[in-house]
Image 1 (cartoon, rainbow, N blue to C red):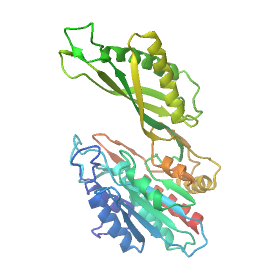
Image 2: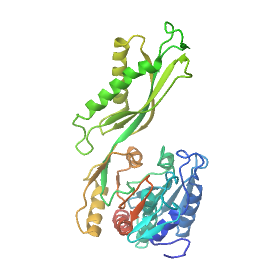
Image 3: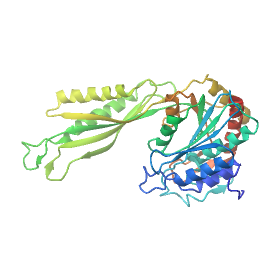
Image 4: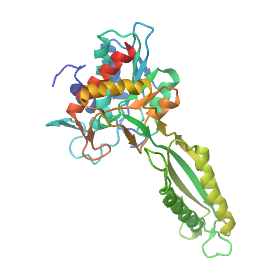
Amino acid sequence: MTDTPYPLDPIDLTTKLVAIASVNPALVPGGAGESDIADYCLAWLNHYGFETYRLEKHPGRPSVVGVMRGSGHGKSLMLNGHIDTVTLAGYDGDPLTPRIDGNRMYGRGAFDMKNGVAANMIATVRAAQTGLAGDVIVCCVADEEHASLGTAEVLEQFTADAGIVTEPMSLEPTLWHKGFMWIDVTIHGRAYHGSRPEFGIDAIAKAGHFLAALDSLATEMNTREGHPRLGPGSIHASMIKGGEEASSYPAACTITIERRTIPGETPEMVVDELTDILDRLVIEVPDFAYSIEPGLVRQPFETDAQSNIAQCLLRHAEKVLGQEPKLRAEPFWTDASLMDQAGIPTLLFGADGAGAHAADEWVDIDSVRQLTEVLVGVITEWCG
């Protein structure tokens, strides 16, 4: 390990980043947020000659962009990594003191995904030393663990000819992942004193009919053919709220639903499917009434394995790893979808390890070095 404040070794830089608390305050009230780690990334990028930008449309939630300018007339590449983490609570040991044991580095964010941020930064500096024609845009983004405010803000001001998100993917290029949609369904009753059942309508009891129908839908969805890589979509009730007091009939019961989507499924399709169920219950169940309110939508992600950026990364991954890499699909969502929706051909490629969001988080050290080498090759070819 080196004591230099701005290391050019990916493990040393990952150590620096892990030691900076950056818990997402949208997940954990009072969490440190990204300000301190953004300050450090900005200083690091400035030290190595990047053109830097601090973006903070949402106060206290900064993202940092560093642009390594090429000589001109070359293709540009956007490298994306998030600097926020989930909670430190319940972590086994000191989450902010990186610990190396053999080929593993332990610490909150070591795996998800400060190693990828470090690899993006260092690979760009190393590749630039060979001379580049195109620009490399390094994005250290806030809030990926909640609503992706950081990447959304970056994409308002920056674009590129291609992109790579270095989420931890076991050094397997990832070309597909699911999307999601949050929806509130409110079942309406009539509030009245519990002693007067002739006047009250129990919204919670009525909601039971919908929950049973939702469970049947979830079972049926599991039998669908779905996407060849991702399988079928899924649906579940994630939160429920209703009633005011024990002695009254509840006027409303709100059920929050999460729907995981696959390529080809649209928000309109999801809402229509739920509306069909609810409209049927209006006919079948006396006094059944509802309202539906779509919430946050994040589109599924799918990219072409034959695209120029995918083929470029596959070549350099095979060269560094010594074998053809396995292609990967994931059930969770990432910022790659936002980049793809913004017209930037994108794929995911990141290090190996385990423990994202868990009590024991670690990254494979050799894989971080391999990730950095692959990125150097991709940048040199793509932007050269």
